[in-house]
Length: 113
Length: 113
Image (cartoon, rainbow over all chains, first blue to last red; front, side):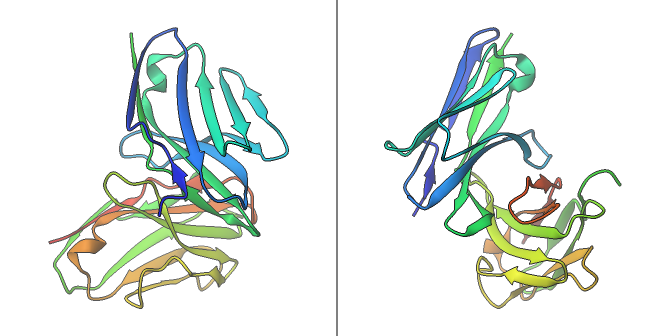
């Protein structure tokens, strides 16, 4: 039973445009959400996070939005760059186990020059 | 080293054999995690160490899997009587404390023939 769902296996966008990656979760105990980025043959690297007390967090070109009532979060990348091409994982933790991340299956983003 | 180091990067073994996977965390990081990523899936939690002790091993799939961290630094994940279904990328991560940002290694690709 997938508690964190990324329903789009892949996304393709043009360089300079906005990339929007979506994530849904089912566990209402989750209170901390993260996005990780992964290049082939490398481990995931932390990108950005958001606590459930916020609805938006911004870091440069990356913004994460959280809609708690809909149990939905999204990652916006603007402007997208070819170097952003990677697999993006949504992850969540909470319920007293803030060390244990539950990951989605990932979305492969391709940014075309 | 500067990051989390995992050895070997690739391990091919035969069904029924015993394997050991090593993780060298970032110096000073007290928390260490093992995750497993199967093809087309996101990383799945296996075990979490705080110092030398396994604080949570609830993700280990069965008693063929065991992990140690005897001196609170390097950790070894041990798999007995390997099965083809154990084939996956085994990821190690460390952090400076519980709930802090995870830094992942590049993983060990285990293939059981």
